[in-house]
Image 1 (cartoon, helix red, strand yellow):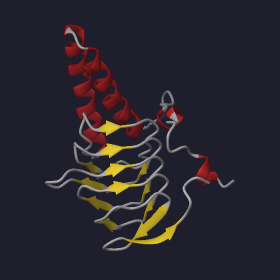
Image 2: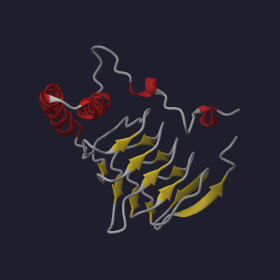
Image 3: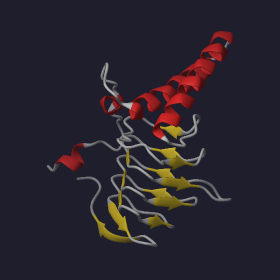
Image 4: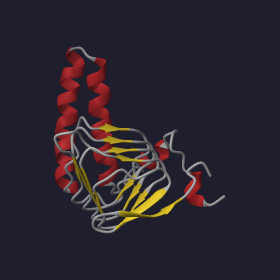
Length: 173
């Protein structure tokens, strides 16, 4: 079994987001602030309202440090890895599945029909643009600087401008 197929498309690997004490990890601290805000808001009550304001301040700080525009209310499942968060722009209605990898300068942009939905374990190369209401299937790969304008099936690799499918594997391996 190859290493890339060991990553689940359904069960989040929370270790991918774990913060190592005293390490410079702005990407993971940004994710922690988003998760802290979302968790606090889901509790309700006056203490949650006050604590959520703290998380908004932390989020704004790490967003500025990272140079990333990831809305604080975006639906992000566990295990997201953004090792170089600089220039990442995500539409607020986008959905990101578990264990995805998003590299620098990636854009997930919506249109009047909706926003992109990423399945589990989707890897997106640097500079890629995913535009419109479309779905990227589980275990798919998007090449660097690709411009995706249509759905990408599970296990497929999309490259180019506009993106075209170059390989399609059985995602169940």
